[in-house]
Length: 367
Image 1 (cartoon, rainbow, N blue to C red):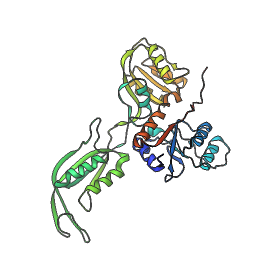
Image 2 (cartoon, helix red, strand yellow):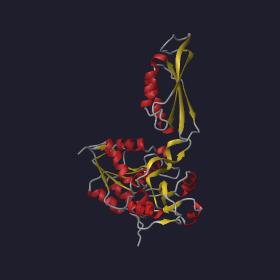
Image 3 (cartoon, rainbow, N blue to C red):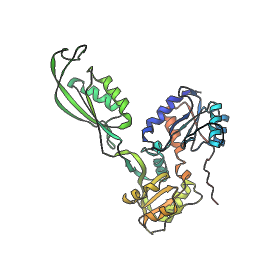
Image 4 (cartoon, helix red, strand yellow):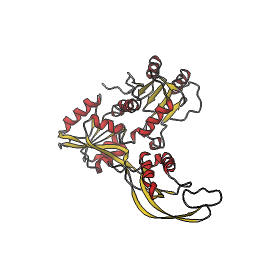
């Protein structure tokens, strides 16, 4: 059985769901454990409970990957006075590392809401509320003969994606001037002499979390001793990151038929929903977890229905009859994240044992 370093598993997860995308209140990432340890198996769950931890021991899993962080509020001590502390102590005692991929997995295109939308059979999916402040523009300058190499290095590092297009850049010819000072070793020209070089200005867009790796790749491919570049923050919304998803059913459905399909797909014990409007459902918005904050966004997007969890009494009034709003339960709306996490790991490490927990950790029961 192949053993994998925890750091490599974390790298695969964060390549899909960068930590920069987690909300400010969240605690995603490595909760406890050593990144340099190797593990033979990982156990995937929505929550870490006593049953899940015992399952990890029995199945000899050295790492538990959960959607919800076990430690969500700060711990001032670690004395075992509550179940969270007892679970953390027990995990450390048995050398079981804990990792959470929470709101960062909520806020990627192929994330928790995407998984729910796919299960409901929605097509033409896009982010309901695209993220703001996550895009940057890189501008660099290099000799003409090296432009293709530098450009390709930038693309390979993840820059240049706009919607369904990649390798996007703008290039313009010009002249750059420089004079190397004492101790310099210029690629072209001579130290101490002013030099003018025919150059290409390369501009491209990238998500903020790639900045460090992108600059390293660019500098490694660039011939100059000192690489000139600019980074600009952009106000453009990131269409591949953000909250919720919206898509369309393959065929319109009558509202009660649609709700019955959602209930069966999610395995919900009960669904709470607004009044039936006697209008067909075609365009559907979804948000895994607590999604009341996206009700108005769903309305503005023209959705016929919005599916989420954790709605309060007054949230149902916000629709004002403009869409069908349904609460299918928090766990029910996020449960498909387990299969999503499994697919991320198994695709990266096909010979590694990634296991989905046998336990439902849903604490809510319905009669």
